[in-house]
Image (tube, rainbow, N blue to C red; front, side, top):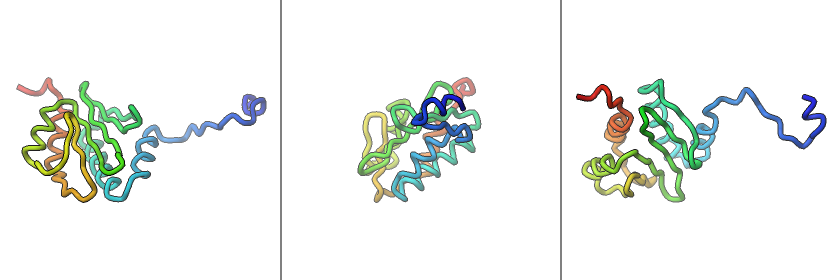
Amino acid sequence: MLLYALVPTLPRIDWETPIDSGIEDYIKRSSEIRKSRMQELLDFMRAEYPDLRESLKYKMPTFERNGKSISFANQKNYLSIYFPEESFIRAFRAKAGSIASGKTCINLKDKDKVPMVYLKTLIKKALADKSKRN
């Protein structure tokens, strides 16, 4: 506390802030449809993978497990979901060809009908433990 007395303009640190508040704040600043989609995927990943490491990397919520990561990015006109490999994007295009995508990301516009069940399946495959595969 002496430090704050010596430098009164120093911002105070709230040690009670939850670790994941950066991700929660990121989601709260999104449009309603994107907020809903991100929260649904976040809840799914947290329930499915208790060992998931969460962080903000490159100003994006990033979720890591087994050396693989999934990231969300709230873009100007859409929500991007980044996968670790291009093969996941090819699989998604085969199922939902009308939704825009990049080399390793899916771009979900607010008006797009998103096959969330299939998207969750891809996330499960992307974060799966490779040692359990045959």
